[in-house]
Figure 1 (cartoon, rainbow, N blue to C red):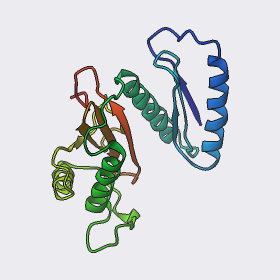
Figure 2 (figure 1 turned 90 degrees about the horizontal axis):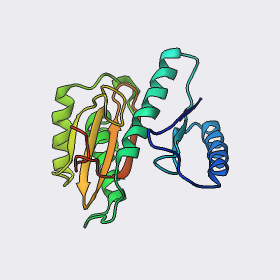
Figure 3 (figure 1 turned 90 degrees about the vertical axis):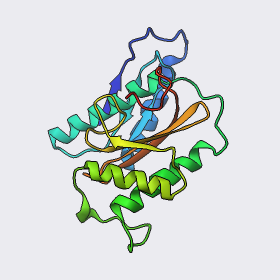
Figure 4 (figure 1 turned 180 degrees about the vertical axis):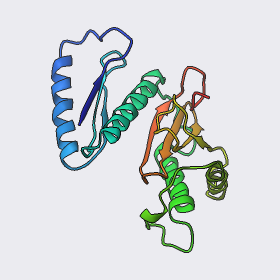
Length: 197
């Protein structure tokens, strides 16, 4: 399934914008063929597209489309990153994702790589507390985690997390209902924070 959208800003004045969209469509097709959720956007004013592999369920399609729009709206509001901070974003993002996965999807004594599909369920406030403890135990006490809200780049009801590093953020989510995990490195929102509220 392909999802396309436009930002609220006027289009960027680039001659080759159509070629970039064509390239994005080809990459999206390849991503969909191998079962990947993919986001592409060249400029804040040029729009965005997502390729998502979903089944015939209309609710699943609607949820995938809404998630695409949430991520795109969030991304277009963020500033550029100029200072990666002392730790670096990518390593921190992986540590945060691993800490949440270990604490909530694969608690001890299971192996770190386990994926207990029988444990999938909606996230709760108790999961938020467990996730916060997992971040502290992983040496990430500045990490913020909460249940996702309507303006977050995450499915509603998932655990959304963020951490400020320099003038950038690690932002991601763990959906305990499906086991889906995602993160990105992005700039600050207009409120100067990693999450809108």
